[in-house]
Length: 140
Image 1: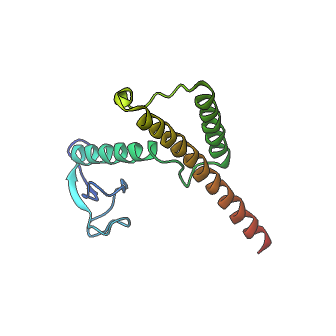
Image 2 (image 1 turned 180 degrees about the horizontal axis):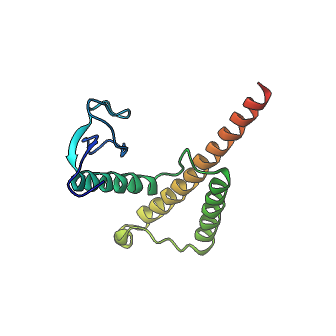
Image 3 (image 1 turned 90 degrees about the vertical axis):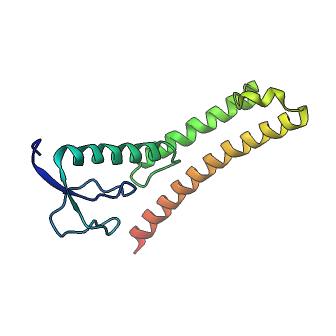
């Protein structure tokens, strides 16, 4: 991709597709027709899209391409963290929690525990789903 060359790329900023296309081709992700752009514009758009994908990935509990071992590692880390927090009562949450009334503090701490437990359950369910899917493929 030279500085003055032109590239066909999906122009939709919300679309995760960063693959170059050809004239008249449509994006397989969103269906928008590829647009001819200067290489520098196309590169900037691709970098923006990749940054968006990376930002979304950080907030996800798991990804389809995540290995089972990674998922198990995250479950173990979350369980360890939850146990430590529970034992130490070292809750580092919202800055203004100290301004809450004691009942509100207790409720907030309980909600934090429930949220952390739900993260673990979601990851465990994904792991179970993957194992069942593998078992099903073997028995077919």
